[in-house]
Image 1 (cartoon, helix red, strand yellow):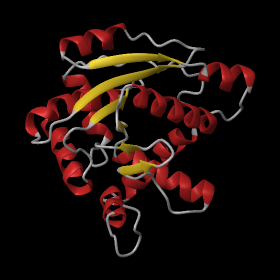
Image 2 (cartoon, rainbow, N blue to C red):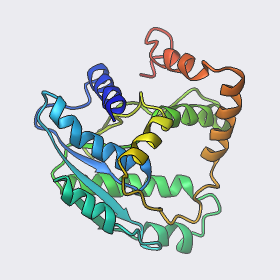
Image 3 (cartoon, helix red, strand yellow):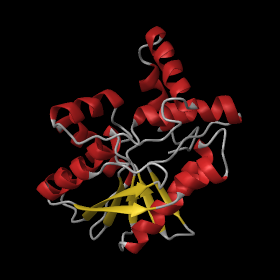
Image 4 (cartoon, one colour):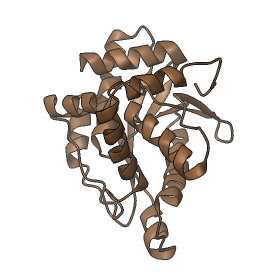
Length: 235
């Protein structure tokens, strides 16, 4: 956890992610990344000079209801606000629309629902559990499927909603987060999504594994490129 908190501190300092008085909605999907972020931001309050509040928010997709009992107990034990928000996103994507490639539509609907839930809870920021492996996979998907060099930013202002989206774990690796989840026995639960494990992102994970096996410093080189403001201006 110490290393993960160090990654969060570094991202916070580099990109100005958390300010005094922030109320941050942490999107909790149930996976290791989002729950690790929720717990880490709770602990980060002890080390940061910045005063802020957090609330965990899980979207109930409607078609497949998450079992949130353990995360609710976890949040109570750690003095973390937590809320489950009912939606009909699963019904829309898989029953009404019968999407053969559901991820894009589902992602857009979830994003809107999470932002609305955050605003209802008087939050000015939404925190997502993306780590550096996600950054890299998104970059490769954009390059291979869209023909452009693009990935998500650590800090994004959503003008239509007047809310900021932050990604405090962009410097952390997936392996670090897996270790945190195991060592601290975090209450990870399955999303129940029918498309889980069969997405383009899974293909990119495997592609990255192959590249890293041949070029071990590949991830570090990409991070250097992303932070090169003079050439790419992505971050």
